[in-house]
Image (tube, rainbow over all chains, first blue to last red; front, side, top):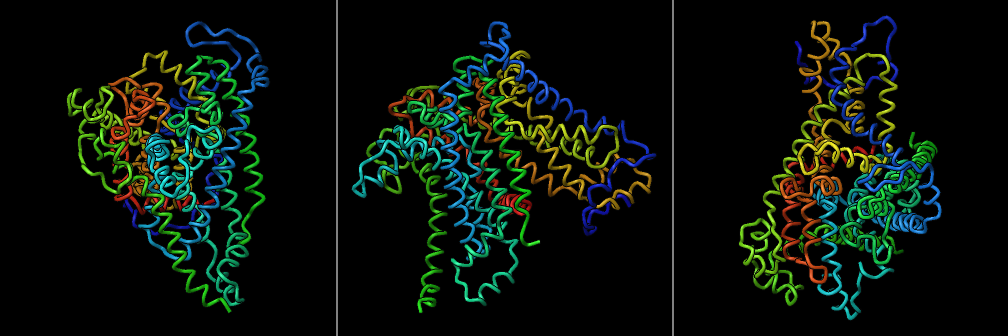
Length: 311
Length: 296
């Protein structure tokens, strides 16, 4: 009677039950066999490169000659590098735009789904853009936003408005990139938020309706406040995600025009593989680790501060 | 009283908004296809109608390398050699290999962390979790150097190296799942005299098809979409995957007048597997996303 997979699932065992018990025999050899591949992979491609990256960040190295130790020079340089600060500013601007669009549109979509339909087909269709490879998304929108022949400019000129160089104007490039990534991410965000809305019990809505509260009032007074935990979760996950924007920029604007879309990830990439400043790029990358570390810390605090009001 | 009125107009209006959102999601993909079947030489004068005036499959033929260079150039290509059949095959190979091996090895590791007893387990797991927080670019630079030193540039080995054996996320995900598996199933098998290794293969793995499939789907989508790593380590014709090929295709295309019809034909090829995934695994994909929403 080895296989009993049809059995109904018992409630999950709580955490401490699987602690190492004193006196019980360990599973050392089996564990070693099961963990060996993962440990090799982790050591070679996570731990070792992390240590190497930290070392490179203290060298001057062009990938060809031998790395030359320069101490903290790269970090000193970074503090006085206007392009680094520009990259942080651009990244921040992008994060605000991207999160703004995705949260507002995602919430609206989630609310519509929640009130109108349980259709799986509609939900699947909404996540299709999220599944499209980033490069493809970039290419597609480069074409849609093309200054001469793009579909969007066709719509604009059809409405009697002047055509725009969406990706070539310094003012429009960053918002355009945010629109592109929002196109690909909003359906996904909406689904996350929709799942959060499903957790709000029906009787809460019934009570609101009995009190004569309308749709919109219920949404702002009941649904939104009860969704605080999931909102916090979505906010921080997309925040950290947005900080790592690369593909869309690399395809559409390559950081231009005049650094208007030179986000931090692209700046690091450019230092490393266009200018072959491996040491400086590593210092930049390590600084990004620190920035994201701070954000993650804030995330933890935020998540803890927002325990559900439903409990 | 305007309440009854608002209800009457509210619902159709809400539906209209939802349909608009679907249209915004899908119309660009339709436009991709529409452009891909437009003759390259006619695009400038035929860029607005819902259907091109003279639909053609020539753009697909030329990006798949089925036409001669002269024919491709006559159809609006830049004359660069394109072989999307090969890139498609490379992408399938890369995605399939990484997904299958990584899922299996991470299941073993996740099980070891969830169920086996050995000294230093929690500390080791803590180190894995810490790696979840490190942004990929930090390890990407030294990993590129390592693959270069190993002489693995433009090889399958270099392409799959960092993700084949494990990702911290996969190990973390499966450990969490195994922790929730009721212990009595394993206990019963233990009493029957089966070793823990055997129990893993015969009891735990078959029970875990759902989460394994969810993780495999996530890994497959992620690997299929991966751009920067394949572009850096395997840009060569032999090992080039679809995403890298599209990036290189764009670079080879003239800046002033990109070969849009060819680029869109290549783009269509890159999303066919994605659409198949939605058709066959739509429910599981949607459920797995919503599941992370509920956990949040």
